Length: 320
Image (cartoon, rainbow, N blue to C red; front, side, top):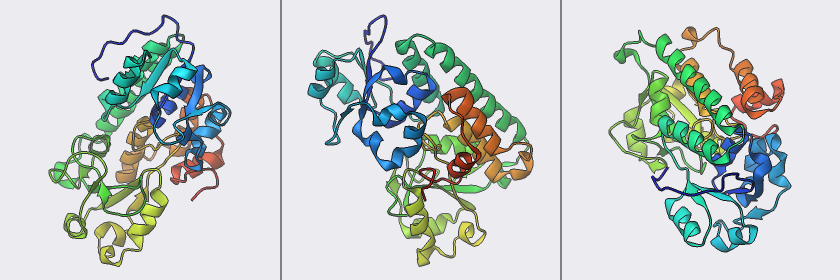
């Protein structure tokens, strides 16, 4: 994804993937058996859904116990391929003699390119699985676009994305040039922070949030439950339209947070559109859609109970 040409073995048999969300894509591409070690962070309780679908995470050796994966750790494992989200790390690993690729992206086109490129490197049936997923993603985006085609710009709600990855404050958000901006606009909303800032995990002031006064506040990220509580317990924000109208909604999170870098972003587009325009998507049952997605693309039989927990934004089957 960084535009660097990398030579990999004709048959990739062993992989270490140091990017949490890309580990979710490994499930999508049917390549978990090739992973010989996992980033230690993935063994934490906050990644319970990914562990549930891919139990190997808890069984295989780990790397990066100190938070950083060193070239020395990887050389000891000698994988055929290393996947990372950092151009700098990928370059350092290659200098150490490893085949390493950066697969980072921050928009839906990037998601498709990353899935395709990863599948190409993996081989076997990964390219076919990638193509099927991309067709599903494109069909969802097209369907949502067609149903919302007659919505006038003046009628589109203002949506504030609350970035709960850290979960400590309601004032972290995303701006222009992000996946969050894309799915909000795809779903027929207006990004509250449009023109105010760019990039992810940016902080605004209480005064700015009060001035924005969004119609909806969608709370996402790994620790969204504490971010939601921080928002609802902040007396200074009690007058916000979204709070008064009961339009503060937690975003689903499954094997990865739907609002960020995983394959479940294909579900996020539909969920967001149905959340903003329920009357236009009455025929779509998000629980059924989620169960079908897990079966077809992640090879997992998701129960009704688990699907409901995912859709409620809980970080585990029994989580908050």
